[in-house]
Length: 452
Image (cartoon, rainbow, N blue to C red; front, side, top):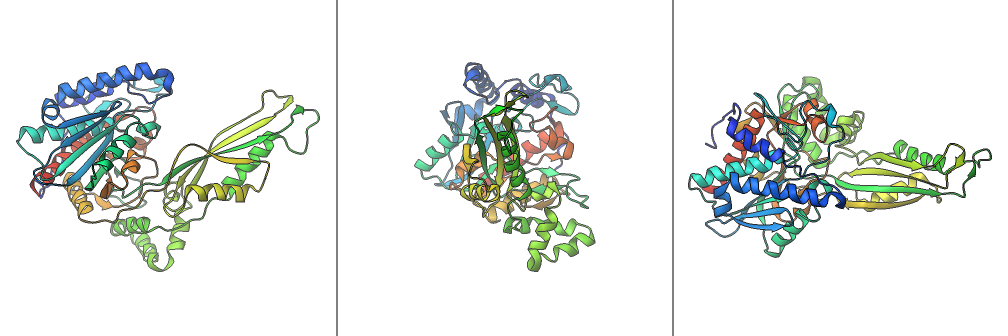
């Protein structure tokens, strides 16, 4: 099977319904106020998984970490071949009235399965289990052990799920050849001038940090303001961070990504890429002019929250802003804070980290395990250009950074710009053909891991 191509035509109704039923479980990551409801929904999902995949639950060892689920599929020989990651939680829905179908009804039509989590990330949970169930039915057993790690709190940084599962694996001295998780997809219409689909097999991810900028002031009546109010001061600090971004850099993984896409680009773009070995900085500066590519060459800063003041005629006594950074490999969380203080240049503005933060991941170089994933991607999306890259967001993978030789964040869903906007947005849905690709991809991966 692994050497041939096969373009799925879409899953049958029974398979689509198993997937849709998982979307009906309202496994929203939220604060403690909704914990009881979330607990019940996660248990409902657990019961659904156990009913749908009886062989998996009879033959694989299962350990639970809260609502997270770690399956061990024992191999015939010593060692671990793969860690297959996915997560069962989803983000909340802002405005249900804007959805074509209610977000938690799991509607199945002729072309799509609709619902929150259809792309991110219940489709991968279900597709992995579909593939393993089929392999077990065929009497297959992996050459070396495979772990399936399904987190329950990825959308709130994974500290109670993925982090605990990873620590357990660390205690067992697990070191896998390959880790596969969400993050990269097959895109259409996003790479300028490239007409073929582009499969981004990501080799790592950017770091994450949120800086809180805060100002205090005596306040008073708005008829007698000082030179600058707390609101004005915090606004100036935010503007300085936006106007003086962190430096642009061409990283090895981005250079590799461009080199692999190059042959599918128009002649003018290919000529520009010829400058990479000698003028990577110039290419990076050109990429920084477009929001779609700037994230590949810079630690980005996004002011997301600003607060201050209570009334139009009252001088504010405090003001604050939150700025979210996605950190390029080679930069650091500490470096982000230092940059903020340097460009704000105001000792009256306090700057500190809030919430969770993480350093950029290590970037694993393409090797045999990458070649395996790329080969399977070509089989299920035969006309795709295969390239590398780095995930701009945060995934559960960062908790497992030292547990695998090669990390590949990839799913063979074919998505355009509109589809990508549905992730965490309105009308999230997955084409039945894409769900079939997901299952086929995992089935082929398991085939290779059970016969190699």
